[in-house]
Length: 374
Image (cartoon, rainbow, N blue to C red; front, side):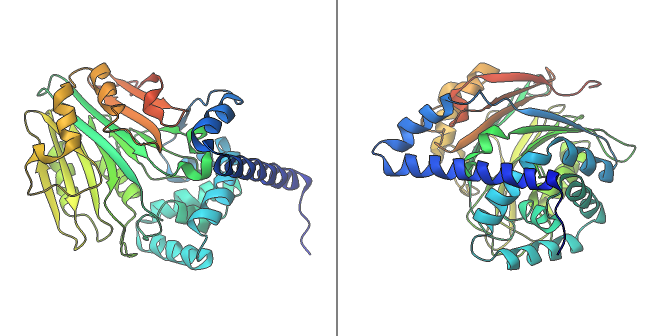
């Protein structure tokens, strides 16, 4: 029988107690009348305000994984047990692990290099991390999001997104992370939003001002040639302008339906790319410098038909504060909003609301995007 070191026993004990505490809180809020609203706030007030982590990653994939795993070891192990194993994998964990591993065998080896190094550094199961980066592509769950892209030509552009999710078993708002990746001769520096253990991006911007955000549309059929979150990182790392990114999005490998907002801060171009259930990808253009997306396919309809779009036009979001007003509007904001992000490349700023749920009702912190922005 293999001996387990005292350190690993302590780690497992911490994770086990954390899971018990979260489960007890969840049961409490569900059985007491008014619990979800009243006790969520009360329980949140018992803990310090969650502050997003900012992790700087080197350019080499193996080093990326190592640094990521070392700096976020305990959150990764917590999410592996709480979310990946017991929520994502609750129906067929073993089968889901095999599907994720098979998918990673089919894609660029650099991703397997990064996730393997991440596994080695954190102590998490490598296949579990693969699953955590591809479960949407494999059709295991569904989420909702809202985004807005607004442009006044090449003078000012805001790219904003509310990430609306299931809160990762109740801890997602504590684990929101900003990742910064260094560039190489072949890959551009990027800043992206994700959670510990994710090597893919939910929202991303590169040093040239190319930004993307992901919205899910329905469920995947369970087949994918490339995880969407990883493909978004790949596009941001290699595309210097709108046209190059557009070409990549229109020729995405087979996979799940989506709405992906694309913006180019230098040219001022914005659009939403949608893939439907039969795999057809279309570009939806803006109207008067503004476009929104939710979790529905809008191609072929009047752009102003969408109620989210109607709200945006009534607000006229031409400043960061006006964009924030849109993101927290009752007709836009969902109760499961984990974070709300705004990319402002021209002013070299990232605005991020996180910690409370829904996040957009709270304060937006400011971060610099790039140290050597052109």
